[in-house]
Amino acid sequence: MKKRYRRKRYSRRRRSLNASNWGPLIKLLLCVVGGLAALAFLALATMLVLETVFHVDTPLPPDGLVAKVSKLFTKEDILVVTPTPYVSPVPTPTPHPMTSYSPEENEKEVVIPPELQYYWFGDPCFVHDKMFFSAGKIVGDNVRMCGLLEYDTATGSVTELPIKPRNAHFIYPVINDEWLVYLDADLKGGGDICAYRFGRFDVDPIVIKKVYVGQPIIRLDGHYISWIERTGTNRDKLFVCDLETQETTVVAMFTSSSYGTSAPYMHGGTLIWASDGTERFEDGRMASTMKRIDLVSSGIKDQAVDTYVHDPEFNGSYYVWIDAHYSEKSTLYYAPASEAEKLDSHAIAQGVVDFILDEDFVAYSIDEAIYVYMFKSGESFRITPERELAQLLGAGEGRVIWMDVTTRERDVLKYALIPKESTAE
Image (tube, one colour):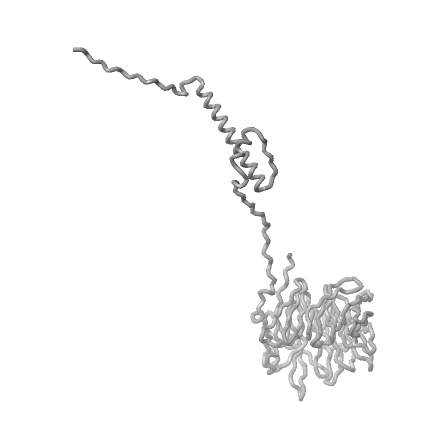
């Protein structure tokens, strides 16, 4: 029997690239070529983005691999991303301290003990957190301001100074660390300008001068006082007195002049007052001159003002005044202190009934409401409540004092501490 043999199939064996001696070298070349192509593609894309987005001029070479790859993409194929501009952070401005001021919460009432039996008050001033003011009661058929009271802002206590007027009542008392000065007035006008060394109330007052007409406003600065007094039918004189020596000097005279009714002012050894100017307005009024004298050197300086000036005041940094005699058309002005020949005046408010200057602000009243104008920020703020009627009485040491006249049944004396403006900018 014949054996069958299965024919063995033989297939042609494929040779691996790894088995070739050239295999590794070929792979390496392929990797190098691929890497160069990737780098060329990345470089082309980068240049196109720079040219399209950031407008950087990067001309491409016309030949070679980069030129061929560039044909695959156009500028329209590139996503244009607009870079976000860098904005420097803006610091949040510090709000003005008066923006959070609440009239109802900040005002304080001066409560007078009933046993003192005083019901009318006036002419307040502050000295080292203590308020001094005149107090009145009915004597006979007249109200007489026959008491001087001291109010402690820390404790709320009220005490009466141990002095009494020799004539009728106290008018325009002024006080500092060393002196108490006042007009001991007669009911029909006139009286005696009197002074005490503060705290020495066990002796008789010093009588500085007899006043025959009117009731002049007295200014006190250190050991000097000043006032304007009517001394003739048409003549007024500006006096200055050194309380230490009791020597009185006439600084200026006014004949048939409205400036004879404009009170002087003193601060830091400087006396100021208003006088005639040289410029005339279209309505016929004359502009004024601000006069200033150093009480030590006695040198007088004149500064022109482009308005009429009445009752100027000065705190060393600013002048303030009104341009009429307290009418509904009166405008309140201020000017920074300078040595220029003409003051640079700025209007604050119109219709000002009264004003009083302090270190950082000027308090003023319009339509029975009290406002403060802050010099640093150039802003005005109302400090009395909306439904309260007020009469401005005084200011000092950062406080404003007024009379609440909402009801006329009795005098209600109130005051408020005004927040100081920040010095850091």
